[in-house]
Amino acid sequence: MLSAVGAIAVIYYNGKQARVRALIDLILHQKADTELIEATRRVYAMRSNGTSLSSHVEVDSDQRKDILKVINHHEFIAVGIRMKAFDENVYKQMQCTNVLRLWSATKAFIYELREKDQKQTLFQDFERLATRWEAEPIKKVK
Image (tube, rainbow, N blue to C red):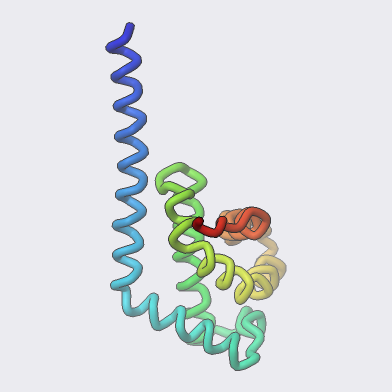
């Protein structure tokens, strides 16, 4: 009986470690992805220049492609978190500010895109993650 409990504990621990390792690998890849870095920079530049990102929903442009590239990346991670492939607590500690800032910058675009395409599920995991983190932000380290 004790061996079975020990085996279950080892399996659980190994699964948790695998989720953390997968997340760290993904973040390292993200930090090396120059296309994603540049697309993110351009999205934030559009926002800081006063450009409404939602104005790019209808237009097939490089700006729209940048916005979708960045949002799709974050949706992928949010789905991975929901499906328990990535560890949410580790990601939240590392990327909470970035996720919330991107959500703030892109939510009007996402809402407009959902309306245009009549698909309320577009980027729903990214929205769910961001709104949950807004309600429960990370705590200050003591």
